[in-house]
Length: 203
Image 1 (tube, helix red, strand yellow):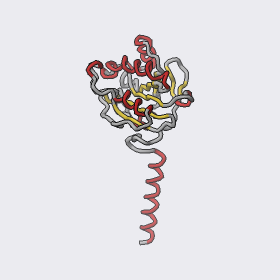
Image 2 (cartoon, one colour):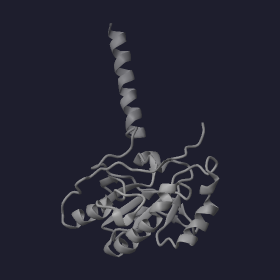
Image 3 (cartoon, one colour):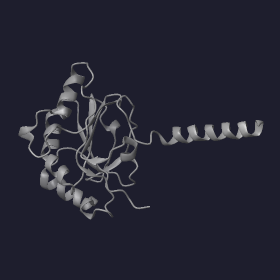
Image 4 (tube, one colour):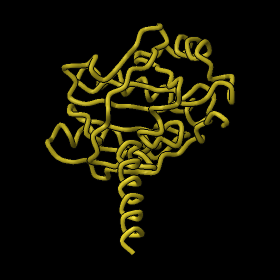
């Protein structure tokens, strides 16, 4: 009986140790602290959150070239950066898809798309597909608004109308930033991201 108890205890400890190393299976929740990252930008330079020491927060958006929803939001992502980067909330876009699964999302095509659309924000590639699972991103686009301490404050969609920005009655990201500026927590702090599923590398 004693041996069975010891074996069970050892297995339980191993389980929690493994969980601690890997983190939550479904990514960050509101209130969690996001770890820093270092990913390659379209200009070949590495970019991380620590490159913005004066930031009051970060608009981290997982997006891509090919998804129709991502395309519908490209101009709005540019507008978010143009409006809020100067206020201390820069957009940092990350392309999470495996280009082997979706060639249109290759690094070269990312460079081309950014030039065509005049992106004013860094557009990074998650080459090892290690960052998007940490965040728990599932769609493109999928937004994570962090504060200056990298605490997740909002997760979800940019607004409530992918097809027509002028018809969006709820601008979730903008409202969340305004809440942070007012010293309060965003409400809602989580919405459903609408977009294409992230294309994962085949095992």
